Length: 218
Ligand SMILES: [Ca+2]
Ligand SMILES: [Ca+2]
Ligand SMILES: [Ca+2]
Image (cartoon, rainbow, N blue to C red):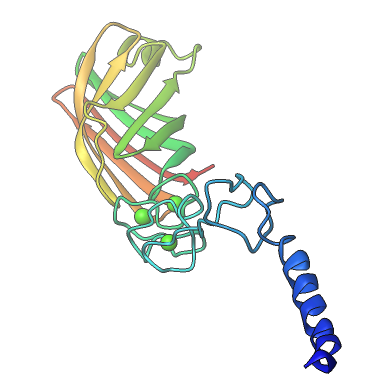
């Protein structure tokens, strides 16, 4: 029996060595590592929370401005639907619009008919279902009849700026610095998200106006 003692010495030492090296990986308060996620000790840089992509379109919430609609994400095609399909911060034709309107006016005064043709700047802002726009005309300061019949300047603007999809149609108003105003009918039709046509007209006994413009997004 005495002869067996030394034979067990080797395995006992090996077990002691294994238990000592094992304490290195379970020490409380150890350094956070990439593989050690989802614990209370996680840091912001290593939260263990995968980026969420609820609609599974390949774009995580945040980058995806509507993460419950797989058709909406950066790079998607913008379509007429009152949504910001491509997540560029504007839906449909939102933006600043400009152009030059041509105004052909006819006024009857003391039995005589006078005609005027003006080029008038158009400025508009389309945003989230509204389109506020203004045509600003300045008449020829040397044209006495224009000053008398149209005023030194006049504007045309919509009475209601609400707009849906690719067509706006409604009442507008012509206001003259000469002290009068008159209603107009106006229509704006978008051919693309960057281009539209404006048509407006005034039809009154002593004044008629035809307004046309091609406007574009800036
Ligand atoms: Ca998504
Ligand atoms: Ca859209
Ligand atoms: Ca957009």
